[in-house]
Amino acid sequence: MRTSKEYRQTAWSAIKPVLPIMLLIALVASLPQLVFLFIQASCGLTPPMDTDLLLSDPDAFAAAYSAFMSSSKGITYSLLNTLFTLMTIPLTLGTIGAAQRILRGEDVLVRHSLAYIPYTFRAIWLQICTAFYAFWPMLLAYVVAIPVLLTVPSPDIVLLTAILLLIAVIATLVFAIMRTYLMVASDYLLARNMELGMRSGQYDLVSYPNTSVSEIMRTSRTIMKGNRMNFFLLELSFIGWNLLIAVLDSAVLTMAGYTLANVCSMLLSLFLGVYMTTAKAAFINDLTAAAPSDNASGKMTE
Image 1 (spheres, rainbow, N blue to C red):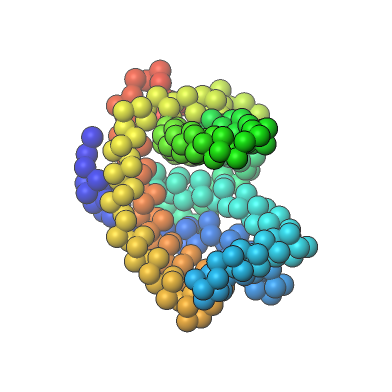
Image 2: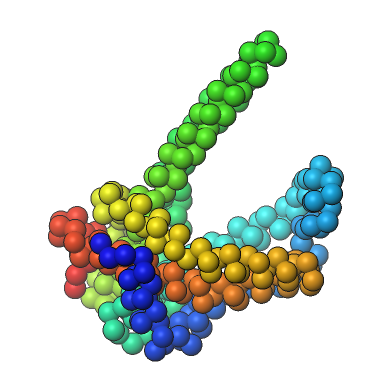
């Protein structure tokens, strides 16, 4: 495997000639969230985000936040947030597909970001399945822990049981994160398979033979085994950019408020998102190229 620095260099070399187009594609992928932010601001659906109150009286902040989320506005906020997040999923695949194109030296157009919209339900189903695959052990831990805590009579035993269950939950969280990293290639595999299907004219919404969600998940698990740490280190190598955006976001939040801070953070994240996505696509390309042909979901070669 190449180093994280080499993947960043590969990504930057691919992005640089088409940076404006890639930023526009990333902006298209962000449009649902931008629309959601506009609706938040215009309809008063912004949850309490008073940093002074949070620092001075966390309990009062938590109470205010809980009261908002249980109100009609809070419920509307949650529903709209879920809806617009789901709308983002196929557009995010468009960004991944564009990154894969430029890594192959192909032309990329803004309209390519819309090519995956007809396959929205498959993309959403993949997200649901990968999330369940990663976190079902943690959900199981909660299902077991809550009845145990409710049925233990002695306060001393309750404390001991709570400590043991907390350790178990932390362990299952670590396990869930490890399983999440087995699935990180799934979106990239799905985007590539969809593109191959669209090019060949064989893809349909029901069952293109090599793009079932279970097959994509199995391939992701296969190629990521033994490579999770390398992928984590690649993500970690972008920490400087993430810290810069966090600092700028905090400054804007303090000076200009929640809505403008969200917009600023999203716009600043466009470049970083394109950069990271392209570096990750290069990483996944190397893994699929090295994998045996019968492991490659959807036959990653043309």
